[in-house]
Image (cartoon, rainbow, N blue to C red; front, top):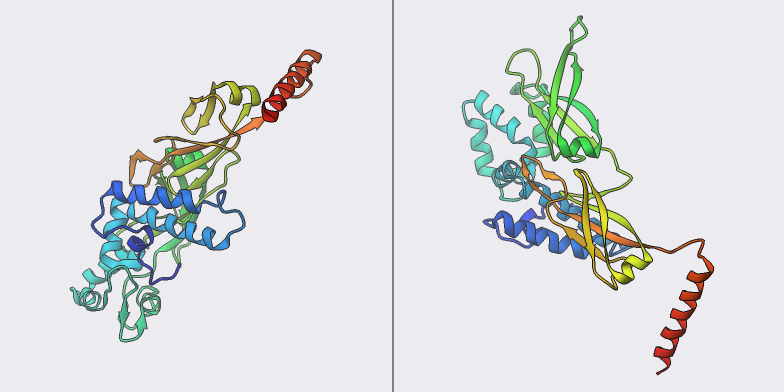
Length: 303
């Protein structure tokens, strides 16, 4: 994403938009730009990724607060605040002067990319807080749905005892790219940033807090209508398929998607696309009925 493109502008909402307005705007754009609707369209796919990132941040109250304060550098908010505290507020003054809402910071031509490299790597001339330990964590989609724990071992430079073993919590709603910050005080032990990767799932495709799945439905049930089971991450629910439902039609199952990070009671939706299952190993009687149906349909078309 172009770093100058504001998340609010991407979704087409104002900066004081409500959670409902943000959610509605995202869903409208997601339906228009989803790769299944635009196969092979690289521009639509890139735009789809952009609105997902914007929605992930703006739909989370804590992330949105940081984004409103620090723009695209919202991920560094905790580091900024710690540096500000250690320097008696002088650092905060720099940011107050240089911040452009929804954009990267700039200080006389020096980008914050270099600024953070200098200030938080431990080698900057002001000697700010050491960089946090980056620790990769991989979880399944089910674990991302429910939340889980991981036991990790962190070693500090110069430690001879093999480091410290910690049990850490991975909250519900995490997605690939989510970072969980674990503060360990101002002593010799550095803070920890858990960098999350969520494994792909054979039965679901994920887009932000929404899930997409295919549901196999017998041809006769699509024609005549039926109730068909749909697997969700919480269990099975029944979907009512109306008579003459077309193959490839998508149904929205509200609040059957992923929990939102930081607000797990608020969940996305599950979009179920029906896929017709054609009959096999027909009996003679069944073939006869299909021939009869074909004759009836052909006669109607000839009229």
